[in-house]
Every structure is written in structure tokens, then in C-alpha cells.
Image 1 (tube, rainbow over the protein chains, first blue to last red):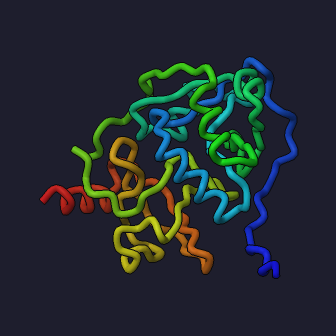
Image 2: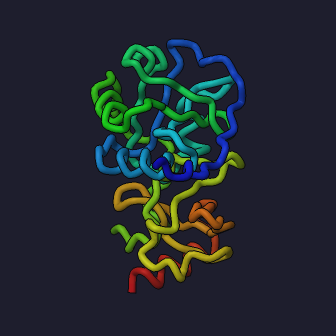
Length: 133
Length: 82
């Protein structure tokens, strides 16, 4: 017997075109498999899909602007390109409010593995606020 | 120094209103996660002082990050360092 379907929230999609292939996709903090796994599981529990939150260069915002506006508490940033993520067989969903996106794959293990193996750069956050008082 | 984390969360994650979010089951003490509470959210490497804005029946917790000069943020960090 099949049990009742879980009741997920509907995730808003903005309906925007995928950012240009050269656009930078930024995520705050180092890539930690345990953190990524926990985030993907949380996202599935609420929204019903495995997703990892990131921000992408759209409009006039470059990744430095995004770091200052969204990630000032992150000492480290990971930078991908849209092209590299899509080339790894991952999807980029325009969820929530711009410039927020989710990196998505239907299988959680594949999602984490592919993110970790996608070409990326790790940089110090130029907008890092440091320790709060 | 990293203060004790009250609410484990990914500070990249945003809900449809652009607020950060986590789950009630990620809290060190669920009883402290109520609207208006000021807590420390994130991970040991990437954390912030936050104010809880809502707790949904499904366990989703919404919050906003406080700026470094916010008096409530200063108060919480001072208490955490004792």
C-alpha cells in the first residue's frame, strides 16, 4: 500500500532565462560535503527537491556586489561558472528572489558529488565583515 | 572565536521572501526558537547573529541576519562569550 504523499511547499520560480554561460555563481563558505548534504536534505524536506543555494551574476550585480549584499559573514567564497555547473549535468533553478538560485539534481548523492567535482575557485571574501563585536 | 551555534543553518539559503531559513529540528534548544528571538545561526565557519521572524507549522524557521552594530547582536555575543 502506498502511503500519503508528503506535503511540500511550492517553491517560487521567477521564470527568468538561465544566466549567461560565463556568469559567475557564488556560494558563501568552503565546500563542505556534510554541510552541503544537510542543506540539500533540509531543502527536500520543505520544498520537495534536492537543492543547494547559490547566487548568480544577473543584471548589473557582479559576484563582488553579491558577496557584499548577501554574504558579508562568509570568510570564504566558492566561485563557479554557469557553464561549468550545467556541463556537470546540474540544473540551475531561479528560486526565491534574484539573484538567488538553487543548484539542483534529482539524486542527492549525485548533487553533492557533481558540485564538489565541478571546476571552481575558492577566494577570500573581499566584503567579509570579520568577527561581530 | 566561534560562539555556540543555536540554529544550524546554511546562510546561503533564502526563502521566497529573501529571508534565510532553517528547520526547527536543527536547533540546539527548540524552545528558544520563537519569533523575535535573537540567536546565533549558521555553522562554526559561517555564522551570524539573527532574529527569528517566523516558525511555520512544518518546522521551517525564517530569520534575518543582524548587522554588527545592532544592539541585540552585541548583547547576544557578549552573553555567548561569558
